[in-house]
Length: 618
Ligand code: ADP
Ligand code: MG
Image (tube, rainbow, N blue to C red; front, side, top):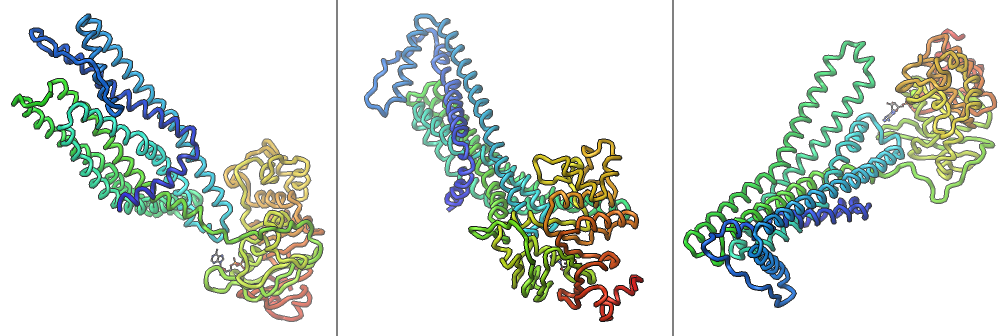
């Protein structure tokens, strides 16, 4: 039962490990050679022990010439021939033999550690390659997943999955190789050696195996549960860090340092407790196993010792007994290793589930199998009976709308009426719950997402810029920015003169999120970015709302300039900016309540007229 679960855990980790077959194979080979030389470094001593400890008065026990009755006997044959030749050498030139053995033992030690390092060498490459791949696919996935997936709480969670969960897989990849190829082989080789040395005593040592298996399975089970809680808490921890550092300005301004700190410390404390618990459980199994192993070893010492003291040891000489104990102690290490690896796998299983959860997250915004490429927007953009809701509450209700190419449409309405949501449907950040959008009569779902979005430019209230140069930000997403085009865009966006006044002009690094620029400057860069892309449809969502009057004037001029000859949908807080729109839509609670030109709406004397009066526009 437990084994089944363990095998299932293994399968997926193995899949990742053997993505790099060559490297994995090298690790395995190095590990095998390590095991062999480790054993050799210990057993090569036996005949010499015999030489040194044997009483010079009694003749050295005669060693029979090696014989091989069957192929199965090959181990015994090797042992016999080694002993036979050594005995001959010892008899002819004991000091040379001693020197020879010392040199070969040193060689065995050297090779053992050489191959151990070889294994580590290739392991490092393998584990980091797997980590890189996993991070790449997680990051890719995170970029592809729809906006609805990315709420703030998810950010910390995603970071935890990319960091600490991937770290668990990294450990497991190494463990799985040891578990499959090193430890079992070490156990088998050591066991065979023990049988060759003394079958009776070996029977005793076999008790170790089932007891260990039991200990491991009990602890792994409880470990998984704790590990899961721990990783979830890591997500909360990252989210708290991210939120606090992004909002550091507000944290300071509101004197909330203590408040935020206390909240963080609370999350951190729970994290500490959970992870401590995980470590404690994880490290318990190998230690218990070692203790049990030591107990069994001492039982053997007692049992074998009594046999020898009573002179009943069936061919059990002192040096064989000593070697047996040494080899047996070597059996403990791989068993401990198996138990560590299984603990690691149990932890990795939890992380793997969390990683797969992201990788298997369904993409809600799907492309058609054979998407049409949107080459030109020639005629009109239509909303047909469009409804939308984020969760259960309807946000947009049965909207019908037609926007002709070249028109400027203004959306006004109180905050929360669904204006931004309406804009988000056009580049398919969300799909309508019912109804559809059409460009030139074709449902936008039929276009390839890339070609659709390449026709759309966006300027939002909060200008989202990235750490990099001014040029990189204007030509965002392009590998080879075109300075000339960027200069033209900057000029139209009223940004050219301030860019030129910057220390290094277009190469100036604007800092994280563009924080080295003022609000108005950031917004003008984001407008230049939209112009650089030369879109056919412009979506402006309260692009000037966050600015002071002077910046607003500059930005508004820039916007007026780029809207020329484009189809634009403008959400504006300040009505003075929408007076010239071809069509003004008034939204309230997800429905369009009024529409018409400025004059028409004023004469209607409805909501729009009311807004205008509030802003002193009439
Ligand atoms: P507006 O831009 O007109 O101020 P929005 O389109 O941003 O309004 O929001 C419309 C409604 O949708 C609001 O009631 C808001 O609470 C809700 N809303 C916006 N974004 C989300 C979201 N990601 N998840 C759930 N509800 C949302
Ligand atoms: Mg909005």
